[in-house]
Length: 239
Image (cartoon, rainbow, N blue to C red; front, side, top):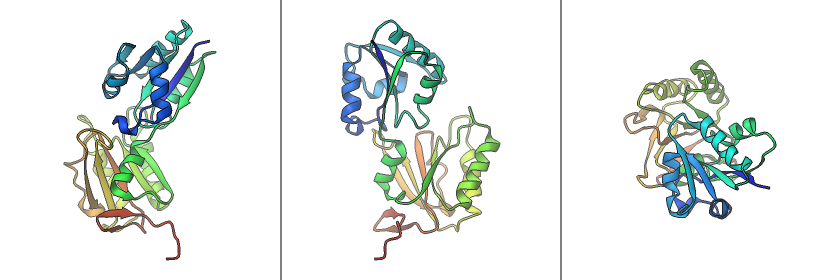
């Protein structure tokens, strides 16, 4: 019986692709994904049937992947990062009937970005996407308020796009109500893949021009500090 694998390919570079994810991709006859994601794994999908769609084609991709499995072909649909975090796992499970589905975890962009900055998420943290395509902005603002007031470390995904430029500024404004301006902030562009760049700033000095859609913004909590050029959020050990 054919199976559908929902595979997290990590932040994009093959060196952050897990052994299991690579093996699953290699054994499947069909690979389905967003065009940009397909390009990231092109070196290990040579000779396979490739099905790709553009931005906002998530439902179409899922339906095409499910159709391949229903026709008896082992298929994988890929997501960057982890497929269960803003990825394809949830949508596949919502759409799947009797098709057997296995979710293959991947390294999230937040974890990869954190490793490049030091140890900013050593304590409780949350992720919040600023994309309001599927979530009303009013809801996003409430989540920012709740996370900041609870002193979470916050990883912000999708901070900016061509048509959405001011939401990150509003997010920083909200978070700043609950923190002083010296709280460390890490900006990591293209975490774990080509074009990688990063900056360590503070809430008061966030470089909004540096931030784009491919940037993960990691905002520390009230205990986070910078040491030797690295961001550290202490776990609370008695040192």
